[in-house]
Every structure is written in structure tokens, then in C-alpha cells.
Image (cartoon, rainbow, N blue to C red; front, side, top):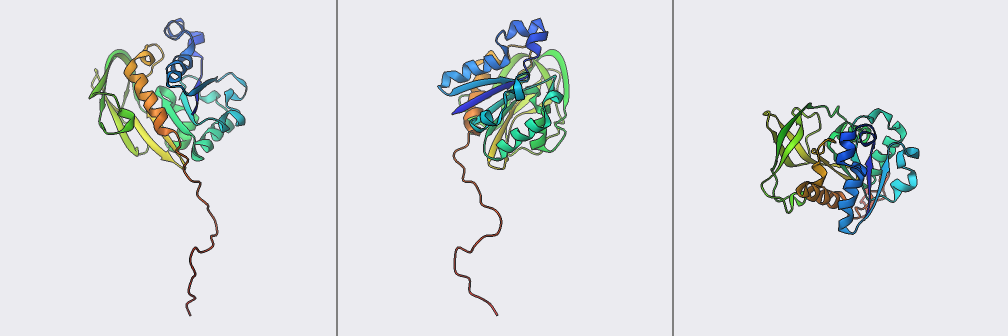
Length: 240
């Protein structure tokens, strides 16, 4: 499996707090633990040519993991459209945290993907609401994070095909934090935790969920439908 971890890589360059938490970038931290599963992992960032998302790179990518926050508008529309098309053609997509506002995710959802938010160092408890789901494999009843950014409902997304996690925050809000969608031949997993100033991606349970998510959205050689005018499979008896 070829996995590409994409990250803006802006906060780490501009904010020392973030640089201290993720000295190799958020993409580096995620790529490191995904590589433990003996998959082929590469990284790409916003300021690379074509954002590191050339036709060749996308063509060989089985699963794209996306983290973005402050520079969504800098992603070229044509590149976002190519990512969308690759998902429709069967590439898996894992969207993390503030990637909910990324161009590819919004294109695939067809909604604003807006939400409530607050930075107050509050506790988050992610409840597993579908314990039989493969993405929840190896996770107990909930994951507790000591400090995270709050995301709250209403989350303006289409009704998920599957809801795996529901978060509760210390301030009282709840949020659909782990949701899957099918688009064309591709599968998408949105997973909420991961604000840049917190060491969330070093949490072993969070890592486990992301690893499970990558495996879940990987395309299992789904047949490509044939559209348009079709010849009959059986003889058709003409009717007068």
C-alpha cells in the first residue's frame, strides 16, 4: 500500500510552540507511525511544486492523509479537483482535524463543512459509538485526551455513511468526530483530533485509529462500472 501524508507545513515554520511539539512537522510524525506497519509512506507539503500532488504522485497513491488549517485557500483549485477525482476513481482519503475545511473535502461533501470551535485547553472524550467497526478495532469504550481544541455541533456535513466516534468536551459540546463516507469508488474517513499545539498525534490510541482508518479506506480493487449505452446480456424477445 502506498500512503501519502499531506500537510500545509506552515504552523511548524511560523510558530515555535508547534515546532517544539512537531520538530519534523505534523506530516513527519504521522508518517513515522504509519511506516511501522510496513507500508510505503511518503509526504508532501503545500509549498512544493503542485503542492507535491502531481499526476504521477496521485496515480500511485492508494491512500491520501490530509492535514490543513491556515492556508486552505492557497491550494490550487485544479489540484483540489484532481484529488477529488482520484477519490471518485478509488483512492482512499483520511481527513484529519481542520482538514474539514480543505478544498478536496468540501468538494466531496458538497456542504460548507462549518462548525463551532474554541481553544481552551479542555478535555476531550471520544466515545466509540460503533464498537464493531474496523476503525475502532483495538480501542476501548472511549479515548480521553487531556487537552484539545473544541469542535462542536452543528457540523455541516452530509449524514455520514457510518459514525464511529462521538466526542464530548469539557465545556459541554458534542461532535461527530469519526465519520466515513463513500464517494464514487472511493472511501473517506474524517477524524477530528489533532490541533497543532497539542501532542495528539503521539497518542498511541489516536495513532491506532488513524492506522485503522488508512486500512479501511484502502480500495480493495473495486470493479470500475461501465456506463452509457449497454448491449443486453440476454436475448430480448421483441414485443409487438
